[in-house]
Image (tube, rainbow, N blue to C red; front, side, top):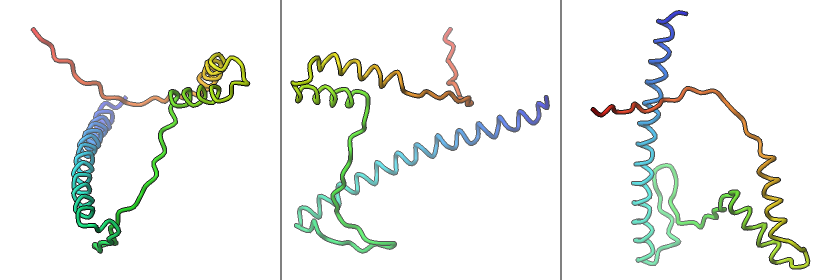
Amino acid sequence: MNTDTLAHNVRGWVHYDNMIAALQKQIANARKQRDTFEEYVQALLTQNNMINAVIQISGGQLQIQEEKVTAALTLKTLQESISLFFKNHPEIPNGDKLTIELMNQIKQQRVINTNSRLKKLKAVDKQS
């Protein structure tokens, strides 16, 4: 094995892994700052009765718009929805049992894929 090639590739991987981590922190901070300014703009427009205003900016326009956000479909919300379905259909006997059986079937049928990846483990500080 060529250890120089391995060392070069490890250094490259570590460099870009560190760069990704730093950029993700910057993105999180930028989103937080943008959200703060968005709250201020919306508050000012609302206070001044201008909720339908169209603000010209370089590259386009800003306008307050309603946005629909669908809740995530987690196993918990799925189970709650199935349970509610059976409660609303009393003609179906054993709704609680059927909910559990259906959820177990869904969990057993989930496909789990395994991939091999490099992962950086944090160094553990040794205390004397």
